[in-house]
Each structure stands twice: as structure tokens, then as C-alpha cells.
Length: 139
Image (cartoon, rainbow, N blue to C red; front, top):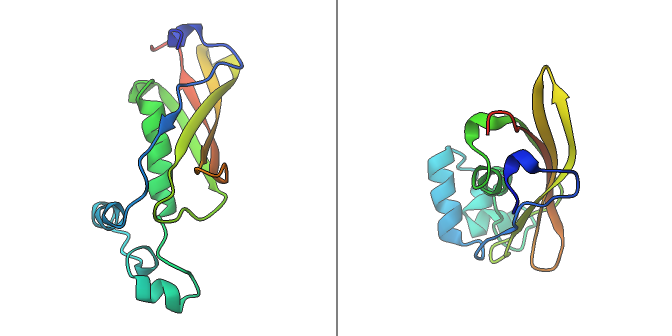
């Protein structure tokens, strides 16, 4: 990847390919986040709710996407980060996080890059979409 201060529309961050989602990961995220909704950790509860199994917290998927950004951009350069959940992420899904520069602009005297972001599973199903704005002048 080229240096961040040289980013241009169309440039992509190197994809972040993750190992399969595990039940242990869901339990650990529940503890770390304080989100103990049983739909994410109790298979009997999930089945009673009409689901075949537990599924990942949406915020876990968003956190993984945040890892993509912070692997390449210092946290202090992040100006905005937003997402929309598109589909349920199941246990054993293998997620890939991607980011593409869609614009480079100057805002309030600061050079910034805007990214389109996405998370897909092994079948290409989109799990999450979003965007981020990063200050290039502070990098």
C-alpha cells in the first residue's frame, strides 16, 4: 500500500481476513462489551427465538472493521466512522474487511480521505457497510 498521505480515490486498504467466528469469541466479546444478550451466547435461547444458532454481535463485526482502519491509520487521525448492519453474522463465518478511498478533500484546512467500508463473509454476503473519514495531514 502506498503511504497514507499519497492516497487517491480508488486506492484500497489491504483486506483484513479473519479466522472463523467462534462461540468463545462471542462469549469473550459479551464479557468485554457488557452486551450479554442471550441471542449471542445461548443456543437454546436462540433456537427458541427462531434462529438456528447464536450469532455475532453487530458491534463485534464493527470492531473488526475498526481493526482494519487502525492497522493502517493512527487513531488520532480518525475523524468519522459509521456503519450499517446488513446481515446476521453466524458462528463459523469467515469475515473479510475492506476499505476503498472514495474521495480526498480539504475540510476546515485539513486534508482528509473518505473511505467506503464493508465486511463480507466467505460466500460474499455483505454483513456490514460503512464509511470513515481520516485526516491525512496528521499522518
